[in-house]
Length: 480
Picture (cartoon, rainbow, N blue to C red):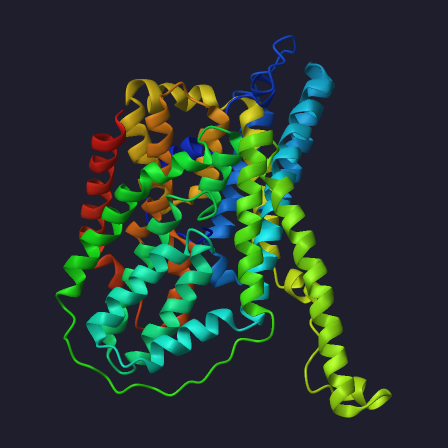
């Protein structure tokens, strides 16, 4: 969930959040290479300069909306500069092979995440190209439900679709329905957009496919696939409490049903089935054969490519049947040939490159040794429960991806229930503010002037009640 953030915090709070969010443990220690010695560069000019570079880069990310500079650019540059400084220090003071092993470890982690997300994004983009999501939106718009029914239906669908699709795509689809049905009703659109954001983030928290943070936890092997569903009830509570409160402001009026006829293109429903098959195959290969999840997803992507080839050939045959043989069929096709690589082109490449910058930059700061500065404060002095609650709050202000990556690399000694707790809080904490998740930021653009930072902030107290209740429910059901 990549977002832009405000700069109204004090300097010391900002520094605490940054350091707390970017302080992973030694990459070499995590690889079990105790024979190699890591340099403590936290007080060295290399460490201080690297931290300053990261802070500057992240401030530029925060200002993305105003600078119109893609968020991947500053963090990719920061990652390169940080590792260059580390290399200089190890060349002069230590064993360069230690640094080399560390950076290769983080590149491998990124490669697994990149390929997994590329496969998932390609499936989602292909379903979108085949009008699967437009068909769902069209059905909702033409059904003639009351405003209150639309509020609950869009929230419910966002909660159950986001575990399979990403929360951004889910939120955009449901918000399109809300805006179309509630045209002119500002109050309805506002609370419904908030409801969709909270539901999408909550739904993503109990599935390895629902959010980048849950995917990270699963790929690390800290939580098994089936164990994520222990978060279902806490996630449901996280959405239901604010939804129930906000629904009281919505009248039972029944707007006039709109007319929007959308047909799913050939192969659309088959691709949905292939996506479910890919997920099942990925989970099975991981559970029974201990293969990394990326292997299953890339295998499923190959199946989609073969089916895409068949769709392309079918559309070309249809064009020939309509126009006859020759150049005419190619110049003015009635049915545009399907091209799987168009779906791959439309992957969120800026986001994928942002992940590269975050993982490498955060990994570099971890190699420098900043973990020692915050580990006692967060997981010893505060204790794991309060530390993990704080992770969710920080996620609403900074971003859950670097924060969760820091926690995973830090690898604090805590129980399985606490790993589930941090998975929950990192996933749903972004709902506290409109800028706390990709879903919220996207909807501020989609419903510009109606769903805003301050309109969301007006209901943050209700969302905070859901956040607190979901944590209580988790501790009650899953223990500490």
